[in-house]
Image (tube, rainbow, N blue to C red; front, side):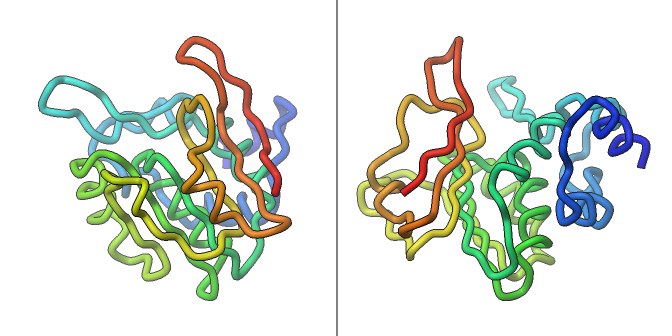
Length: 184
């Protein structure tokens, strides 16, 4: 409650559906690392790789901003490129409801294994490791969320967006991106 109040007081718009989902989904269910920073609007680690890399769940202000810009509604099919620990997927699953669908794509089989375990109780969420994106088939998509830096939206993903649908993505190079809404 304090986190959401602080975000609102700082001028961040939080749709009611996102607020309700955040009360239902516990960040602690998606990481074994310390989550105290999350409640102070900081990212939280969800996985440490064997090579010493850290995989993070985004800070709450960024999660809320992404979900607000997605304009989520019940029954939509959302594709998430970049798993971010599964927390965002769980929030979206609550918002799109039992008639919606969430497809999570990530290049790391380690990440997909981690989040698949954490998302067992979410029957409308499917997780896939993407290794050969040219042959990956997706049905018609309402919304696409890219959670990390990308230079352009891949053709295989943009082709799947239905008329009137769109993608939200941080487009740019590794040092500078703009959060863009790419409409079809």
